[in-house]
Length: 486
View 1 (cartoon, rainbow, N blue to C red):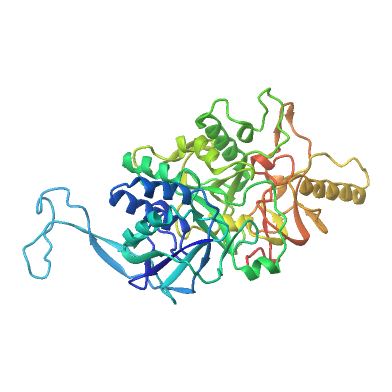
View 2: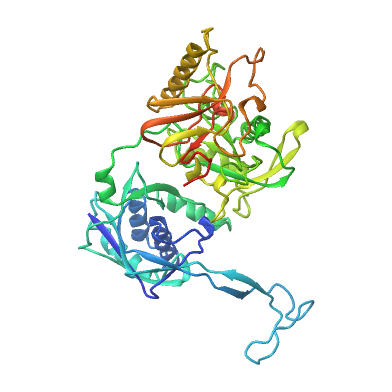
């Protein structure tokens, strides 16, 4: 076992990390600690033994944590001087500082999200790591050089802790209470490259965390073959379009991804086709239209679009294929993407990185565990019911939907209610959506909304039916008969 202890000398943490766009600092991200150690390595002379220690540390599994509860201080607006890039007084209104000479630096309002833990000391604990005694002096040297964590005002002291307390937050793959960024193999090299190029550090890998008690109480939650960490894009420009035009949006997004992929032809997990051109039997990239639905004022207009990635695809593979059109090489910032949708118009979108985005633009809105799920876009049945009797035809359609759930990795629902309208306010009726095009013209398959009930909570994203990769059959956790979220 190996452990690092960190103490906030100021008794607080300030959440303003450029890589995470000011994400909350508590629980602290383990990768933040690694980044602080990397900074200490470069500022301290780049000793070879310290580099070896960092390369060993980045290859370890996600650490457990021991930490206290914390509370967020109400943000206070402060006026911060901007960089002085011109003459002190030219074209600027002079400002007085404590009665001294005027200066020309303008001030911009800023807020610093501050977290104050109940206990100012926390621990990162690698329970499965076998520490190399030869590396311990180098690691201790690095820890002693770290002066702040995340923000320069978050002053800390760091050390190797031989006898850490028991962890109260452990890494998990299911039932996560928190999503924290962890360090992966190659992180040191990636940070070095970003710094040399003058770019901000790229975000690292996500990992779920939960209390040991939660891990023991709850069994694994069934989940689909798509990753529950969605890549969400928000609309920044263009006309307002309704949810029933979502097929034009998802097709435009798919075309942009296919053309912008760094590997040509795109791999099977993106294109949905094998190298020989035949249809893939594996889960592949899906696109989901994100609309304003589910509250009393919802009108169903589209706010953005999400990409749902197969669980089998690694983060490094995603970055290799997508960074070319997602991130600006010079600034390291998420870049604007233009989508052309024919007669529908054009959109400009950007990767969603706000701390408090609208409900529809949050992954958990579409992926959190729930027993009941209702469709937002209609489910396109894989086969048209053959029975002539209406009751038998409905049973056949229900069985088709149940089989579609199994096909994406979920258990069969205990109850399925098919309906021509969505249970979410703002979502159009199934008949308002254009039929899903096929190679031979328009499909004759049935489109229907549905309410699905499972025996236990299941995790999304839930996309069902023949159009699941193009945004049809998109479901959302449902908790009320009026379409509102609890």
